[in-house]
Amino acid sequence: MKEIIYIQAGNLSNYTGTHFWNAQESYLPHTETDETIADAEISFSESVDAKSMSTLCPRLLMFDTKSNFGTLGGNNALGSIGEDAFEDSASLWDGTSIEYRQVQIPKSDYQKIMEVSSSDIHGLSPETKALGRTIRYWSDFSRVYYLPRSLQKLPDPLSWQETCVDWKEGQDIFNRYNENSELMEGPLRQLVEDCDNMQGIQIMNDTDTFGSFLSSFLSSFRDEYLKLPSLVFPLMAGVVSQNPDCDDTPNLRRFINEALYLRTLNEFSTLNVPIQPPSSWCNLMTDSLKFATTSVYHQSAILSAHIETCTLPLRLKPPQQDLFGLSTQLNWRGSSPFAELSGVFPFTSNSNFEDNLVNFSVDAPFKSSTRYTWLDVTRGFSSMQIRAYEKWSSTQRSSSVAYGTSVHSIAYPLPSSFPAFTSDWPSPRPPYSEASSSLSTSRNLATLLEGYAMFIDKCVRRRTTSLASIDVSLDDLKELANDLWTMHDNSSAENDESST
Image (tube, rainbow, N blue to C red; front, side):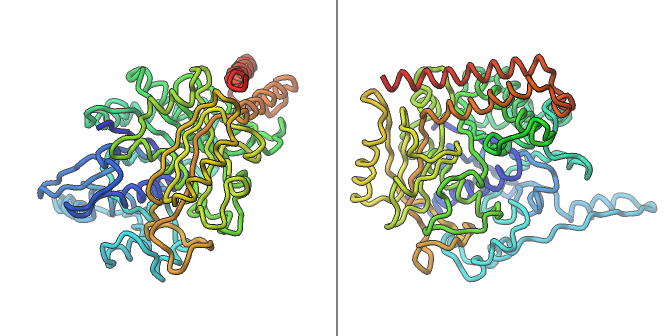
């Protein structure tokens, strides 16, 4: 067994993570005779309560502001303090008191349905078809129980504060939070000590709100766990593809924060897969899948399907891959720890790799570049579809030295919490869907890093008022630009060597 500890930070990341854990829950055996493809102990730990009842809970730390947790902590966190506990504590005081109690957030429609529905984890009932219109928080459609230590609630920003904080302010927030909660020596260490043979950590975070926070987390993590592999999915704000303006202070702050975070990942993380925002996903709005483009509930479901699929080999039974092997394969020269995510979901009878493939990491058509290393994972493919995949894959090699592996597994699960997309799925919707996802390297990554380096150079030359208002010195920005160019050159050199 090689356990993985998961970190989620930010609203979009926790929406995506909720779909991810609902998929993991669908793999769990519900009877002693059930067989499952996934090793539950890799991602779940067993918790036993005072009544000797056993529950599997994610090996997870979730960070977000308090208001984004919704009902989580009252309805589906093991060992949480309920209303009765407050009543009991009040009875210990016989003096005069004035009670102020915050209005309790009501349960979501989906939580109410789950309480009265059967144990069937799949299917789409008439009630759950309308789920997308009633989701308020990412906890509204969660199907798993969390340990209290998994819930890391940060104070809500004041109404006048921007959600995207200055880089140093985010680092200060982490330092204060770590000091007050003993995060690294408490919840994190408890998760680590609960593992027998830990293979690494998997992180997903919003760079806009938690980039500098996670940067400080990774720095502290490496002080204690120097060689433990890490896989990071930074969910970017997409400013690099928006023709940013050096005079636009909010976007300039986001851009610099993203650039600083990419440098942190280059230094401290083993493998990193940048994810652009949904507005940047090429070819997504196809005839096979349509949804409200502003719905984070739907957007995160698509993203989660690909992240869950491309990392499935890490959790299979028997194991197909581990974090160290995956990182070594994709960062084959050890100089550029970045990869990109692409895929097709759902993969229907009308789908093909050339026209329907979506690249989630760069704002560019997939077929504009060839791949150098890759891990492809298909879900639920027939033998005919596998042959079609193999034919397509053979055309994507950059040269004879290009190296890739493929894993073919069961179809992707669609629990009742999954959105009711307008798609080519038959009616009623099946409990599973075909899918294809890939982690790969190509020249796209060098182009992405070049965009950050060029813009920082431009801002340093212009020295605008907006630049002066951001709490990063000019010398630090010059150093950042140089580091980004070095990262670009390392990525370019890797690709150039592959193509020779």
